[in-house]
Amino acid sequence: MFTNVLHEVTDRLDSRFILTLFFPSLVFWGGLATVYAADKGLVTLLTQWRAQDAGVQLTQIIIALAWVTFFAYLLSNQLVWLTKQFEGYWKWVPFLGKRLVAARQKHYQRVLSSIDPKADYERIYYAFPFPDEPEEVMPTRLGNILKNSERYSLQRYEMDAVLLWPRLYAVLPESFTKILEGAKASLDFMLVISSLSISFALITGIYLLIVQSVWWLFLLCFLGGLLVAWAAYQSALETAITYGQLIKSAFDLYKDELRKQLGYEKPKSLEQERAFWQNIYDLIYKGEAGKPDDMKYLTDKETQASSSTETKD
Amino acid sequence: MHAIILGMKRINLMRLKDWQKLLIVFLVLLFAATGSWHLLQRSKDTKIVYVPARNLPAYYLIQETDLITKTLPLEDLSEGVLTLKDDLINHYTLETLMLNEVVSKSKVITPPSLDLIQNTTAVSVPATAAATFNGQLTSGSIVTAWASYPTNKPAINKAEIILQRVLVLDVQKTEDSRNHPYIVILAVPINKQVEVLGAAASGPITFTLTP
Image 1 (spheres, rainbow over the protein chains, first blue to last red):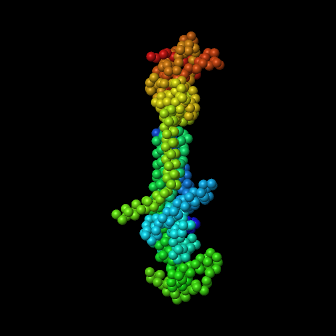
Image 2: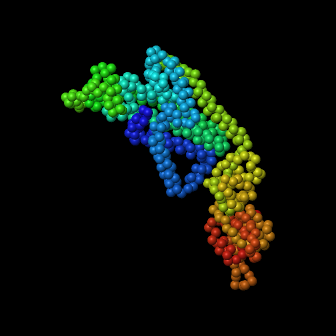
Image 3: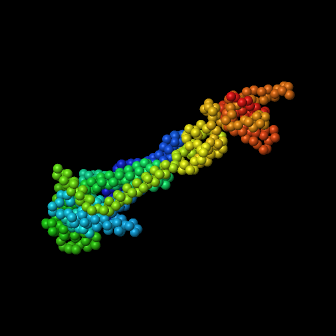
């Protein structure tokens, strides 16, 4: 769910398109071509290619680059879906999907129940984030890390992250959004590398078995691809923790900015703040606030005062 | 030290009776091992051979760019099959070689010397039975070709060497010509092609065997 909203962050990363999507796609297709050539005789195919007319060679290079660019664009459109698969939204998979989700959730629920939240606070918070509620546990570690950051604002302030993130993002300062974009791009990059490596391992593994290639090439491509995928996923987990922390920080640090922009008075206690955000949720989602009397608008003076403070800043 | 302890605890936590992950790793390794073993067994009974990368016409000088490799079971490789690259490169085809099909020795001609095929092209000239030594002239022979020109005296023709040391690629019998029942295909230097064709059109070509 939250991933959909976060997609807007990715949309702003056009400058990172080449590094995050184009470059991995180029390596992926180059790798597939190399495996094909290695099986058919690398030197022979290279000699055949060199023997062609320069115009034909140039056309082939242009077509190859155009295809890689097109593939990278396709990948960019599927980035949300891809991230969801790493998060563990597998229920769409026929027969196995629901069972796999249930089995993995059960495992992580067992892990969650084995943690003493008081004794292991730091470990849970920084190294192995989980959603606090067992029923919210996801089937993968990445899913749990992102779910943890998604649930954070709701548990602390009754702020629904999915609903409020697009609004909060709009009031974040540029310096903060840059850091956030960097972390998101890094996460996307690792997930793209991981998914392309899995695809590479499966495609080349099956292809080399079908064409009865040499055993070492099969082993190298299949296990090598999976090893790279695993390493990239492990890196993605580390990046996701940083990214999750930034999401949490955004709510902690800039929820007041959002309140000001929405034009409401500052709540006087945490309890009032929670009630306020619950009201905002009702207002946005259901069309009417639960307790409209509790939501007082800022006076013009207060609005001007806050604006002048911002200008001075 | 504290970080190491935290790391160890984290690893323990992650590995907490995670039999599902272990099962996936086991299945992956099983697939890799089975696949490798299968390919290893296959490789013992197979051989990598060079085959045409496209259909190659008859009397065509094979180049490296015309070949690709193919792995074939040993049982499919009969005697006389050419498997090495050097067995095919710089060899003339005697008939059309099909894409991806193994090449047998009888389908190519092995030149006695590279000089005889470098910068050459296949040219066919009609020949009499006598000119082919009554069928004794065969592919692989090296000959000197003579052209006959008419002189002022009607009964006498003038003979002139037009090619020295040329390779005979093939000798074919034709059904439709009484005077020239044979066709001799020669690997003629490219710069001599027009001259040979002109000489063949104006009169008979005869050959002498060159040692």
